[in-house]
Amino acid sequence: MLRVRDLHTYYGRAHILQGVSFSIAAGEVLVLIGRNGAGKTTTMKSLIGLVRPASGEIQFGDLDISRAETYRIARAGLGYVPEERRIFTDLTVMQNLEVGERPPRDGRPAWTPDRLFALFPNLGEMRGRLGGRMSGGEQQMLAIARTLMGNPRLVLLDEPSEGLAPVIVEQMAHAILALKREGVTVLLAEQNLHFATRVGDRAAVIETGKIVWTGDIVELAREGGRFLGV
Image (cartoon, rainbow, N blue to C red; front, side):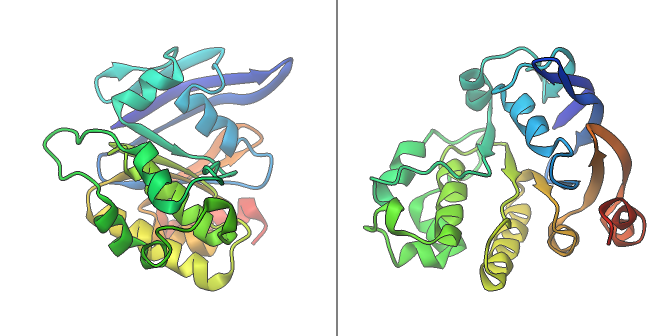
């Protein structure tokens, strides 16, 4: 589904990503795990085209998206949920979902508001509520739901558990597991080791812009945890 090879990305003269390589199979949840400042968000932004990599290859299915514009990458089926959520605070839940709606892909069942309310019951109870009057956890759910309305083939989730109450983090874990059962491919950027091992299939540990360890999720707590200081 996605293959990243020797990706180098700079901010000015700062060399942030230094040869990042990994791949994701269709229907898999790959956790990109690392501490703050390790390069997780820059990796996400490089994949979706918000930051232009200096070199390297990004293969999304049959497409080379290494130098593609963000809107073309999104049209190809790559969805992105940024850490900042960026919902429309002056629109209701339903209006936010309508903004994200795109046609279904590859003959798969389309995501609809009803299906998303089954995935996120909290949202179903506040269809007419403005985004700006929702809690952080509710806004995170809405950001994911709005992205799914675009019927993406692969979803980039940037730290969805960050700053959320434990009960909301648990709901988020259930939602990601449900997405996996639906066959949605997910790249999840995280620093929460417990959350990562709950939802992931495989993990790649990133440290100072380099992938320093990859392995099955069952090995992460034993091997990958030493890079996170846990």
